[in-house]
Image: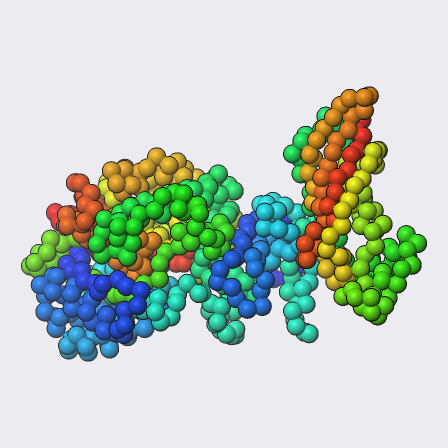
Length: 225
Length: 392
């Protein structure tokens, strides 16, 4: 007998969504998964940061630790971050209805503060909690440029480095406060091959625990094969 | 290993209370009524009973029931583990006691107020954590909200759907078939209340992919069965339902409702183990079974049971069901009493009583030319099964 330190990576082997009865300390509907670790062990756990409709057998997952009490944490899983696509998708490889893989963006205070500063946005609500609260916000929150940048990064991670953005439209909703997670999802909603350009339209959404933070569309020019 | 009590014993009497949602009586009162009714049905004085078998989760100890029945001495008494999984196990153990000469007449019973007192469907949500193995096992699942029987079964259902292309409508068809039989059974809670597949699909989620109409009822009531040797049964007043065989099974890497760690979780190997023993010891096959009681606490696990017993191939239960074979007039009418979805949830014993009525020819939804009836017990737990046959 021995033990191995698990990588924290796994795939969803099966899943349920609990609605009834409602047990204190859980939020419902509650995603519960049977996760197969890449080391071969299965465990029952919660699948966080995605909707029930986004649960799919086989989806890649990554572990994180939910602190439930001062001295207790539980290993739970969320959709695994997608690796950046090193090859650019060709227009013919993409079909309307294709789904982009889910991608979680953990919203740490560091991410919110550093991205605001990096985008030269020195508004206090993005780095100073006292001032943010004084101005009526619950906490510091992510700035618009970062939401836009994360959206573009999500789409280009899928499409590849040589995809050309023709436009990017976003609409903001629920704020991105710290200690939450925004999960990006998207799908191909149109294809057009005219005017000398082959363009695909992607509709996307970044959802945190309060609702959609960002929704939008992007148009990308892709090379024909 | 071969079971040596095949065809040696019989169910000679059945008795039950009304099945209700709020009995207003103690479970003991109901246990006694059901046991007396089973003896009266057989034409046996209760004092002749010298064996009693029940199964875990039963709150009426056999010595208490025996005293209330006026039984003087008991030479066999046992409690079979794993709740509904023991429904046919109590009969297997009764056969073992009878065939070994440890008893002459054995009462098997189940009585509870599962709806009005302790609601069984709430699961283990209020069970305190502990260091003993039975409690420790829940620490792998309860912290994540997987606390009810419905949730434990739902995990198998999703994987089964993924591998075999079954849909929630296939689960619904099991429920519709049960409720059609319940609709014509005056003893059933859902008497005269059939459902459509649309009703099923519109019923609310309990634990997706399980809807309300995939889940059995919670019932107040009691059921008792009187078991004796096939020889003694001939001298009693009912046509004996001969126990062709009865068997128990727990399979490799068995857990209580959560055997999630096997290579495959879409079959029920412990039920396959029962099937092999039953067929081998009785000499019967799936082709010899005219009607069956397939344990239906939750509809999804009816499908792999049909496969484990060879009524269809692996993953093909959905096609078997879509063809209407579980329904009235089908190849294998199932749960002709309405099942636990439609009649009552007495942890499988009421289904075995229905099997006895099918052998006697007295079922309200009687199947024609019944020679052998299969009954199964609770799935996902260590389980059991039996085959009842016409007397030879």
